Length: 81
Image 1 (cartoon, rainbow, N blue to C red):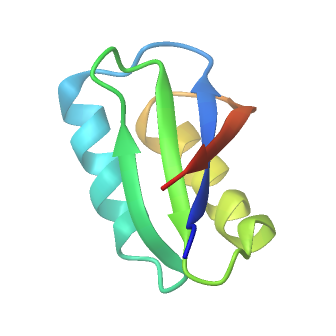
Image 2 (cartoon, rainbow, N blue to C red):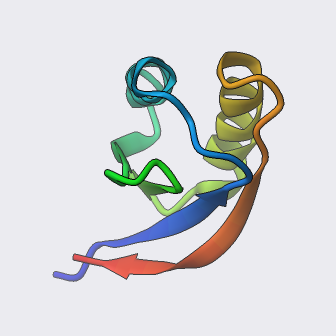
């Protein structure tokens, strides 16, 4: 079975501390299966449990903006596992 996630570009690089906080908070959401911020801190990969990206991304935008001082997300590409 193929699991599909999405990569989103972060409008600015986040710090290691911000990355950890964002990942932890997003992972706690019920609809999120996994969250990963790339090593270069330029992208975030999100996999949802039921392909319900609209709800999850609404929360993700707010969490990222709050923790990383107005960082914005833009869709970059699909991720297949």
